[in-house]
Amino acid sequence: MDSLPLQDDAWRVAGRSFASRLVVGTGKYKDLATTAAAIEASGAEMVTVAVRRVNLSDPKAPMLQDYVSPSRYTYLPNTAGCFTAEDAVRTLRLAREAGGWNLVKLEVLGPAPTLYPDMPATFEAAAALIKDGFEVMVYCSDDPIAAKRLEEMGCVAIMPLGAPIGSGLGVQNPLMIQMIVEQASVPVLVDAGVGTATDAAFAMELGCDAVLVNSAIAHADDPVLMARAMKAGVEAGRLAFRAGRMPRRAAANPSSPTNGLIR
Amino acid sequence: MFRPRECRLAASRGLAGRGVGTDNGGMDVATEVLDLTVNGEQRRFAAPLTVAGLVSALALDLRKVAVELNREIVPRSTYGQVWLARGDSLEIVHFIGGG
Image (tube, rainbow over all chains, first blue to last red; front, side, top):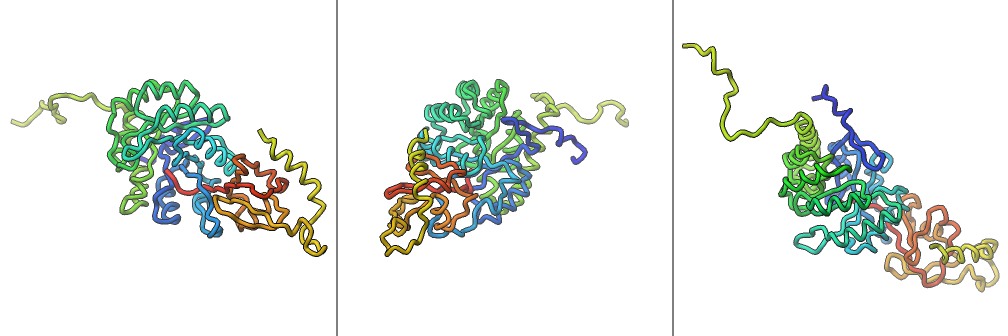
């Protein structure tokens, strides 16, 4: 494994290069120490973060940045909790001021129980953010037409869901993910729905450039161990994609020679 | 895009020389109260106060927050020059864990 050229297999988004093809969320952990340990084990270089009001009654409470250093990890601020384009733009303008960078994750969700991407609102917010100078990685439905349109608008990465957020059901529509991958000229990441390492590997085998995982790690019994499993899963899936899988056959084909048998 | 703040910056020139904690019987502007809405909470501070002064008074780390004043971003480089006025509404945010 170590002799394989994973290091030469970086992916690029918005002019930045990343060796790790696993992007992890920083939400839902029981505490910040576990967050930090799991992210370390995942090998991720990019982490998603949310923007929220500071707690005025406890200003000295530990902050994410004290555990997950923005100088070590590329923060990808998200628009979680925003239901309109206006909210998304306002939130990411604050994120830009707090962090000083333009690379952001846009997500505009519909209501529970699906929390499915609200695509009309996503288009509107993407247009506003791009106009405002942001580099937008966009969470979206697994719809090849919508994905292409987002790319044409100028989004720097397309991030279709594999399954509903936090469901852990894996990639439910591999055909559409593959179609989105094949037509895209910007990176494609499966975002949402990964439940365990095989799901991450499967997404990578479909040709995705990277996978974004949060709940599957944070809600595992042992988040640090699952983070390491996700790292291995993403690497395995990527290597398998590059290797090119054997054709599927409807019948058996023996693995050992059928000649030279003793009589 | 940034008109209200420009006015505020111009006004600050007059305030700058005034200092805080003057001894003229408590009638100085420095002892006036400043009612602000910060993250949805009503808070009272002593005037005059800049954004930098507010962040400091709230015991927050300047490097880890972003500030919106009346729905407009306050660039970090101007925190020390943007003076707050009665009734101003501020949002002070930071990064937390998220997916």
